[in-house]
Length: 139
Image (cartoon, rainbow, N blue to C red; front, side):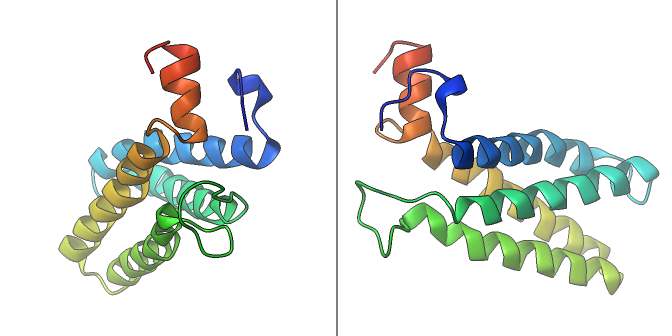
């Protein structure tokens, strides 16, 4: 699929991208806010909701060129990893395991946002082509 601008993204991609960008931006705010504060909790809940939205919406995005299984490619491995990380982080905070909660949420942010984002922006992928070729004219 050739997409010439963000305005021409398919709806499933636009929804996923909205959740993913929200998670990418909210994560550091939640993770750096004073623990237990209203800001930390509000941003944390918002980040978790964005991560779940991004993970669920990614199930409606299918690989066409890479090796895949029923349209799901290697990047989709991060969906259950994200659900596991969010669930484990919530379990830790409910059980007052603060250090484990902090570590789990940081790892989930790094894996679910940073790693997934890096893979999504690789040349040859839809968003990668949009960024590197269309927006920056590099590849």
